[in-house]
Length: 310
Image (cartoon, rainbow, N blue to C red; front, side, top):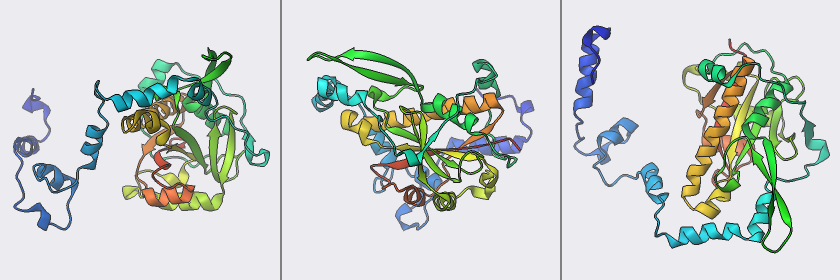
């Protein structure tokens, strides 16, 4: 239902918008155009010669009840071997020299409903540092272990499962949480991976890594003041952890998990009075190269910029 015209500040603009939405013209021959915008591709959806990978992914990741390959792939995960493997996901002993202990978690000073109501994307920051305790609390609420339970094996014995702050398809946890520390007093400038089972940071890169990562960002118009942020959360996906069981549909679960981690972190940061914004304005090849990722088996899926609101 259209809004009453008296609520529109510019009737001519409203009329033009309605006109644009009312029809779509087809280019005479889109193949002759060297520079094709996304709008041009949308206006020519009937043109079959151009690749449509996003829609192909949606079709490829559909589940059908008669898909025996998918059913067999999933059933493999209910035996003792895979049950044991899942119980030790991300269990490791990182080198002591590269490990940074996190302070105890802080209590978020506002209620969940208030954090939800207050949350806004903040793109400008004061340049003031953020303490490791606040960063660590965000990491724990985003991807930390929140509970354990024992599961009996069919051949006897039991294994311990660790549950985390966000849901993960099949408990496979294909998303790792890394951070680029820009101005966190207790940390040297560098990149770190959060180890959820050990509840520590593991150093993965130095100032040169951060500089290369910064160069990978291509933020239009400087609308996000990355230079005055305190740190950047880096969500690194390893999709075959999920796709080995679920096939192409597993990539959906990877994206779901990224969203869950991001939302928990945004709400936690809001509770502390911090400002955050999602940011996908980075050149993938440059960002993956800076982090030592191949871009396919492991890739930077998303980033969250964090700082004090400016």
